[in-house]
Image 1 (cartoon, rainbow, N blue to C red):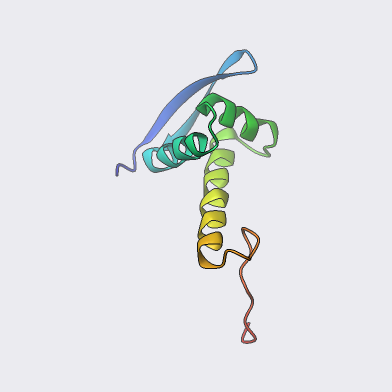
Image 2: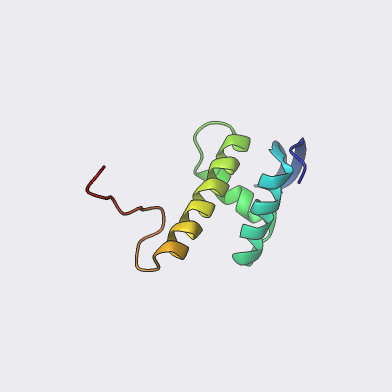
Length: 90
């Protein structure tokens, strides 16, 4: 998979906005939108509404949180997403 950063554009809130993402993040973002049965522009708008900092960084962090949540659920389905069990050694 290419690690090239590409500029993407979507229309949100009636105006065009652009952000830069690596292909891997773009692919994961599209997968999230598909799983949530929404257009990519809708997902970007959702992230845009709640972000601190620039949109590109917010989208990367959103993808990371989604992946971490899915990995956590795969390990222990009873554990809330994004939480890891602490061991006594920690």
